[in-house]
Amino acid sequence: MHDLDLSHSKKIPMSYKFKIKQMVRLKQPGISDNRMDSASVYEIVRLMPADQTGELSYRIKSGMIERAVRESEIRGA
Image 1 (cartoon, one colour):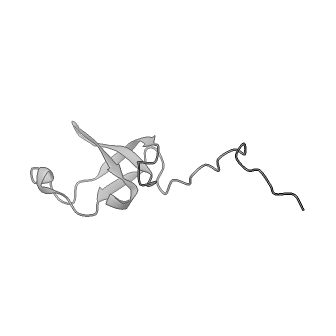
Image 2: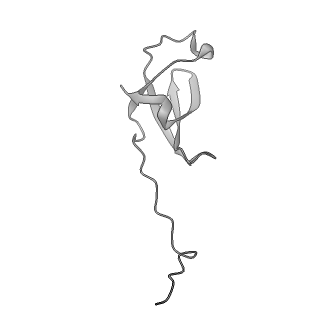
Image 3: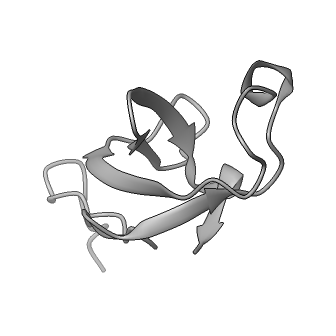
């Protein structure tokens, strides 16, 4: 039997839970979010690559506030 060499195979794209223009909320607003209502709704504006831990991330926006978040930090609105 021959060993399969998968070093040149294409990476399987990761599956994003949320889509661009989808509305989400922060699961647990942090200290820097105190000025925002904890129930603020954000819009997904960009899908970002996985971080160093392998977790997918997003750019979200609410009014003039835009920030990066990990998938585990947000939930559907």
